[in-house]
Length: 158
Image (cartoon, rainbow, N blue to C red; front, top):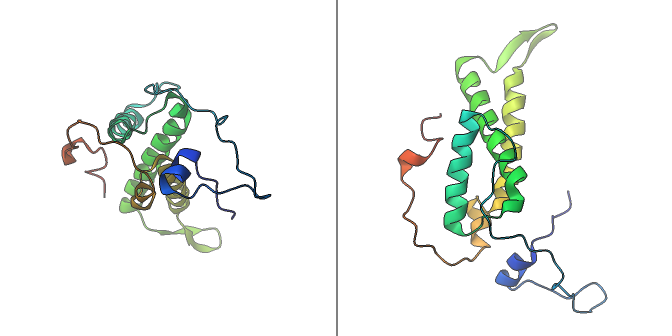
């Protein structure tokens, strides 16, 4: 799979902004920049998804990475997080292999869990929510208080 392009701001912070293929300097002044506004949920979120949304808003705001234009992607992250948690809870109570028409087969919840995990990782990398992604981002620290473990909606999930 080809490597996805990095945002210009990230390349500039890393010092990896290079010249174009023909050796000409690339004009990045026309790159669109989103407004610095807090995202609003793009649709009615379930209670579980809303808890993850609030958690994500808090952390992205603390890191200085909030943009209203990211609302739909943020909702996708939140939905994937809840789906992953539900699949994990289902698997904790049921076998990984189940009886199918032709013998033992993998429980469908495993496939749901794996897809949700892939989606979570993809969204997490885009939002700077993995340790590796955070090493590539530099932002000014905000005066907000640090997050306590009790505010983490995932703290009680296996």
